[in-house]
Structures are given as C-alpha cells and as structure tokens.
Amino acid sequence: MSINKVIAEDGFVIPESLIDSAMKFVPTDSESDNSSSSLPSPSSEQLAILKQNPDLLKQSGLDPKILDSLSPGKSAKTTTQDIVKQTLQAQVQTMIKPYINFIPAILTVLFFIILQSLTSLIGLLIYPLLWLTFYILEKTGYIKFTEEQRTVRKMII
Image 1 (cartoon, rainbow, N blue to C red):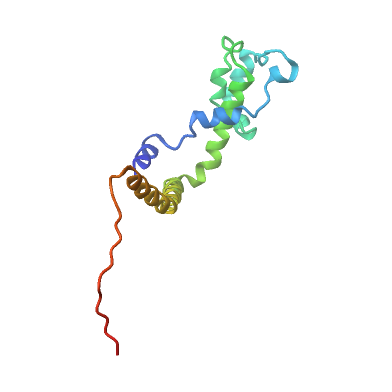
Image 2 (image 1 turned 90 degrees about the vertical axis):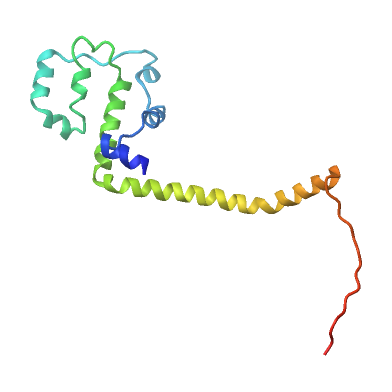
C-alpha cells in the first residue's frame, strides 16, 4: 500500500541500482579500443535542429531529454555510458507505460509468494528445531524424562 502512494505521486521509476546493474553488461568504448574516449560533440546548430524536432529522436527510440546533456560545454564530460543509461531508462519506461496500472498488483503478488515460500520453509524446519530444543534441554539437565507404569482398568466386551 505504501508503494502505491509513491507510484501515484512520482510515477513508477526503474531504480538506479537496477539500471547500473544492467549497465555492467554493456560494453564500453574503453573495453573495445582501450581508450576512454567520449562521444563527438554535436554543433550548436545540430542541437537546435534536434530540439525543434523531438519526433526524430522518438522515432530512433531516444529520449529528447538527452539533448540537455549534449550541450556544447558538457560534451567532453558526456560519455557513452551516460547516454546508454538514459536511453535504457527511457526505453524501459516506455515499455512499462501500458502496464503501469498493474504494477501494484504484481508487486503485491510477488511479495505474497516470497512470504509464502519463507513460511513453508519455516514449517519444514519446525520439527527438527523442536527436537533439537528438547534434546539440548535434556542434556543440560534443565528438564528430565521419567518412565512410570500405571495400573489401568480396561473394559472388554
């Protein structure tokens, strides 16, 4: 229920740690040619044309917000990792958008399945744990078991 409130206020966003984990599998420029090169910087005219036509970027599967990070002053700092990360995040967001109403229900079901499996594991371990507890209590002398015989009347028909 608490995640539902967060999704209603901020919208569903893929966590940064998940994207960073996915980015570890993406080869970088430094791995392919052993140099830490950055992307060539587009001219200010090219940036202006792309900002006027954001549909061109959307057709390519890119987010128009990437243009802000490609400003001429920042181009030296912009690496392929940053652009790929932003593109990956934008593509995952657009892929999830049709299913956004089902995300709280899916998270609830996943949480229930995880808790159910943990309780079933505890249910399997309860009998050995009880035996071990009474065994330890008996060996330490905290409890004792005595055997006794009683006379019992039994009715036979």
